[in-house]
Amino acid sequence: MPRPALRSAFAIAVALPLCLLASPGHAAWKPERTVELIVGTDPGSGFDRTARILQKIWQTQHMLDVPVTVVNKPGAGGAIGWTYMNTHPRNGNYLSIMSPLLLSNNLTGNSPLSFHDTTPVSLLENEEIVAAVYSGSQIKTGGDFIARLKQDPASVAVGVSGIGGQNHIALGLVAAASGIDVTKLKVVAFSGSGDVVTAVIGGHVESTFSPASSVEPQVQAGRMRAIGVSSEKRLEGVLANVPTWREQGIDAVFSNWRGIVGPKGMTADQIAYWDGIFAKTVATKDWQQEVERQHLTTHYLDGKATGAFLAQENDKLAQILKQLGLAGKTAAKQ
Image (tube, rainbow, N blue to C red; front, side, top):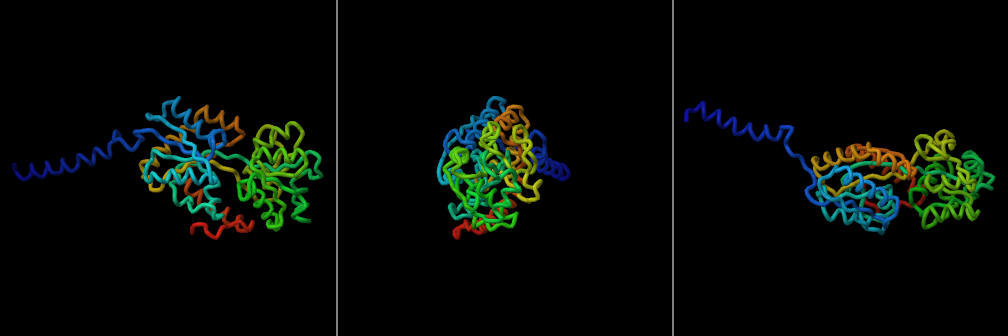
């Protein structure tokens, strides 16, 4: 073969694979077998409901070509589920529901696993946290609440679902932003938000920081009074007249957000695939209806933005948990 022909053949041989890689028809990564959506709680929890609506949308709207299984791995504040997920490194078929517990468990020394040990995939929604008192309380507004705490931080018993959890953190952020010594707060821990609400209604504790979904029915029934919400903007419906803490001059914004992480080492193609799936998911009518039904708000971020969000939240939580005296000596270095 003449030399010019050889050079042309070689150029074609090199260019052809490159063209195939660059062509729109090139098949990027997608799951080829069952996707496991891991939940670190028992069935029926808020995290479990989020996982199951994702499963329903993906299957009924044929967003995925493979089955989706919800796998419950309860225990250790979600750490058992995240640890199980990480037994499948670099595998985009395994995803897990995440929450602020992914950060606080590590910061308090309850788990060696930090968000750095996962791949951020998506932020999905916020469960807003409302401060409320029983209807007979002399505290009428958020200003009254702060004034009482400034006079004596232990003068108001505040019920929360777990020491160091998201509701306790929201209380700490509000108190710290008001110049109150958070170590002197009278915090009463319960096993769940339902128990907290029952205690407030019964007058066993005067106030609570609890999810909007737990507080709203009691406010509507006249058994509780909402005095502040830790969200960026006011909520809708029954709680629409409740001012945010920022509106009341207190720079404290924090939600019990939920999102998705994958095992450490996921590839760019895997992340891009799930970016596309979650962007489509939160735009569906089924998702929007579920968010409204559960008194949540959609807060969608893609994988890259979720990573930046987690780093920012981790810094915020590290500071307030230290002030609360809950930062653990064994927390992983950040």
